[in-house]
Length: 164
Image (cartoon, rainbow, N blue to C red; front, side, top):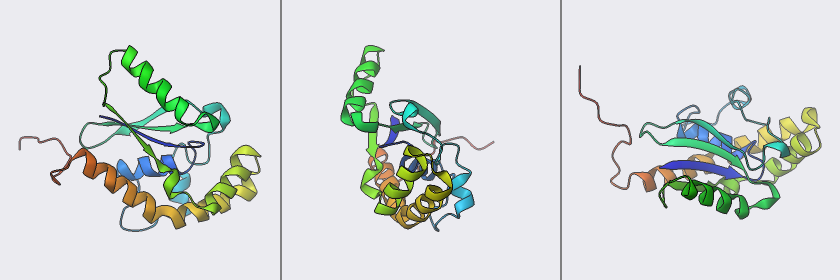
């Protein structure tokens, strides 16, 4: 399964959710600002990255994980990706789009707009970090829901390896 965490800009909620999914951010506590800023895409993409699929890693179950900013095109971008994937020979149902906007709060929207849309990084970045840290438990729950959907039996998603 290809897992695509998607939001408006691809700069805040989707990179954080992808990092949680890949084990790069903790689930048991809210990350510090420095941990968020260490993520390669966090508060770095802008409108030129809308519609670009960024592969950020492979999870323990062997599923590629991506981040996608949809911009104003919204679901049109998702349909285009699904169509392109099918034309390239991909099977229907192998793409799982996860909309992280459900976890976004007003702080993230305001800070993200200031930082990414207006380029006022010094003003917007602290606001979006504050908002992301407040939204973090919702993002962790969203990732847990995705993982439960990937592995309904509740066991580990890690591939089985024989002991050496």
